[in-house]
Amino acid sequence: MKALNQQKTELFRNILFITLGSLLYALNFDLFLEPGGISSGGVSGIAMIIVYAAHPKFLTVGILNAMINIPLFLCGLKKIGRHFFFGSLYSTVLTSVFLDLFARILPVPAVELFGGVFMGVSLGLVFLGNASTGGVDIVARLMKLKFRNFPIGKIILCMDLTIAVITGVVYRDFNNTLYSVIAMVVSSMALDRVVYGMDYSKVALIITEKYEAIATAIDSQLDRGVTLLKGQGYYKRQDKMVLLSAVKRKQLAELKELVMDIDPDAFIILQDAHQVLGDGFKRYDRNEL
Image (tube, one colour):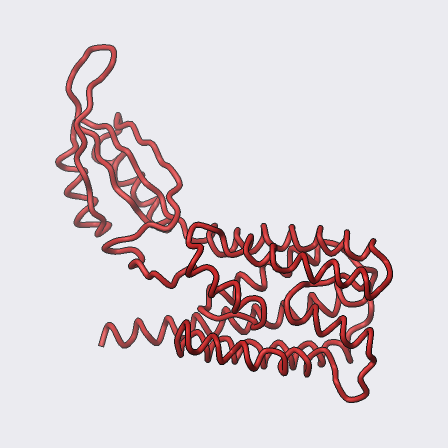
């Protein structure tokens, strides 16, 4: 029952992230990028170029975005799996609908380059939902399986730079290329920040004479593991025990209060820890970003 509830919670979380990310992506595209001919990269950027250059009568950016993604989805299904496929399909349909909807109802504002921030945040939310907006994102996700040490944002950036150059050629204004590159770099940084920056915990190093009582309290009250490290004070050369424990962010205040209640003279060092894997935290998944 517990595992089933956990699966439902994760499914709801993924749908929420994908929905919010897709909405923000389309809103950002129609408000800040497309009006000034600034490329977002990816399939939506290619669709924008086609609409501008060819003026197809019945094809919109949203429709083209959905059409171009079909073969890439089939590739994603084969290489990555059903969950990623259906999540990406949901995201692309939603994004395509929002692209055309917002294009009809939103006013055209002055173009602002912080659109790159929104683009990166929106893509990051979709990736956190274990999906993609389609197109280049799927290719980048497949490449990530091979180049495992490269951040996903940097992979997408390398691929999008080509589309930025094509945008400048089609619009006959290489200012568009320069602005697009700036937006893409900002987007890449924001994307990596959302995907990797949100997944962090804290590692606590606690130097105390009452290490047995504190270790027992951390184990029983916080349900966190504790490792005993042997240390030695520099000044008096006395042997000391150092507690090492990884805790979640929401447990930080409780940990400090717990330690100080037992030993007000304890010395605590707290450090950020990204992507903690193991019991009580995330499990390793070779397909993760």
